[in-house]
Amino acid sequence: MHRSLLITGASRGIGRATALLAAARGWRVGVNYHSDRAAADALVAQIEAMGGQAVALQANVAEESQVLRLFEAMDAFGPLHGLVVNAGIVAPPLPLLEMSGERLRRMFAVNVLGSYLTAREGARRMARSLGGEGGSMVLVSSVAASLGAPFEYVDYAGAKGALDVLTRGLAKELGGEGVRVNAVRPGLIDTEIHASGGQPDRAERLGKSTPLGRAGRAEEVAEAILWLLDDRASYTTGALVDIAGGR
Image (cartoon, rainbow, N blue to C red; front, side, top):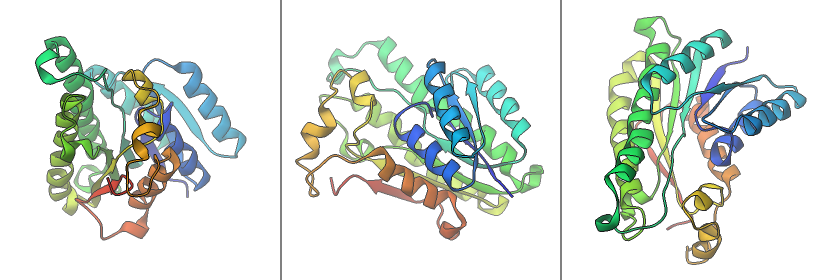
């Protein structure tokens, strides 16, 4: 029996890699995207060409009404068994004293509020006391939450720190509901998000300074996410798993 998985921010980067790997392992995948419908449709087509099942679902996770609509659309795929809270943004590097209030508002609206709303709706569907079948939730945090990202992304780091707290707290709230909650904390991963922050070569450039001497790949993060989603990680909850090359 195929299980249903929703991935937010799935049209690119870590989300896309996770969707492809999940589909290859038998999950039916909800591919959430914000604005790039062409990329989401192309991903769905690629999954279907592999013999998998997927659907593209548009929503801005920073808007509660759109999150509700997203999950209602996902309900058509059957009971939800997995959720990857991946949607997030970054902005050009700046010290905090130069950041505008609008930048901070948007950063926390998408990365914190959006993640909390998404996790809430996933919990409402997987919790056994509410008629769910249990499941697994994986939040995509960042090692920036521990490093602080000074002079660059201290706002992003703070937002990801909130996800670490959510992971540990929600794991305790949902353990009795048959739902496991964990987080992966990527480091310098070679994805498109660095270009959106104004430094397309950042991962390649800084990755050389890690103990492993290179940037990571989205597929390496996806492998960890799929392990946490799977029953092979059945005794793992509340964990923060660093995938950062020792950084």
